[in-house]
Length: 212
Image (cartoon, rainbow, N blue to C red):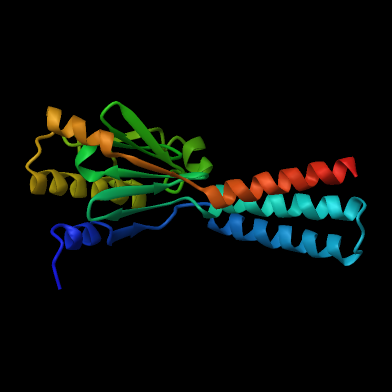
């Protein structure tokens, strides 16, 4: 069997190194799906093509939106990339390209001139109102800008910066160099086509129901 150079390395680069659990949205998301399911069941019980059908369509659309906004977002790291899965897209940011991590109500990562945001990790509204969670920035020269009291958010930011530093060392790339800036062009963006298709189809069905 002939070995293809780079094939094993590419596979290893896609292996999940660390998964970050979301800091909010899970309980409201599950409750939202349960509520949408109950509304859908009640609407379909009458087997009517009138108002109950319209309510059923809206319940389905609501379920998709709850999933996309509250349950879909997450973040993890592979051997090569920081993967930020947001509401309707997924960004794969090369670890080598990461310059800065900022946390407010969302996780934001800067790579070159571009900024990528993921709502999976962040401070709650309560934390923000209490004044404990203005935007905190962590870069290679200021590891203490995130306070120890920030717990998990601090860990996530520091861990991403640590993994980015290790990736640069392995690649022999210097922070702030033209080589690092060039790696920012390697960001890959994937759209959540399944969710987009579901919302588009439900919108079309709802429009047909209104006309009929």
